[in-house]
Structure formats: structure tokens, C-alpha cells
Image 1 (cartoon, rainbow, N blue to C red):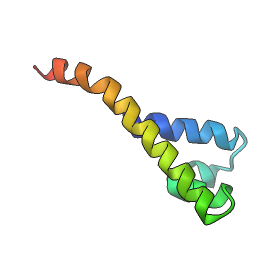
Image 2: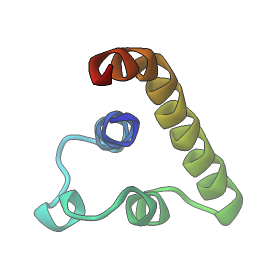
Image 3: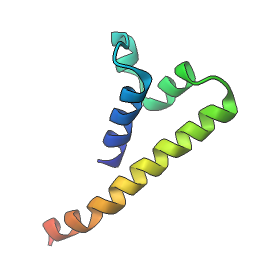
Image 4: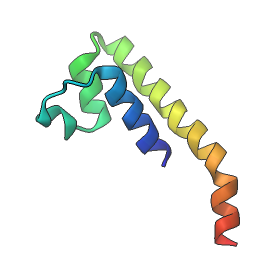
Length: 68
């Protein structure tokens, strides 16, 4: 779930007029395509990873209760 939210944020951040091919790329490919420089690419990947973790951390208690 967190990855889905982060991917949507990435797509919004990268712009709404993406070509169909770009919409099918995974987030790492999109970052390599759109973000200049390896250091900045790694930073952006970490930021999206942190967003995915934050979403998961917020949803985990609800998921645990739903399973119980």
C-alpha cells in the first residue's frame, strides 16, 4: 500500500503529461529518466522509500486489527 501511494506521488511529481510508455515504468526507471545525476536519483529513491514506510507504519495497526 505504501509503495502504491509513493508511486502515485512520483507520477504526480513527474508531471501529468507522461507518455504511455513512461506510465508503465517502475518508479526506479522513472527516477533515472527524469532526475539528473546519480546522487540526486539516489536521494529521490530514498525519499520515496521513506514515504512508503511512513504510509505502511500508519496503516499497519489497522491491518493488524482487520486480521484479528
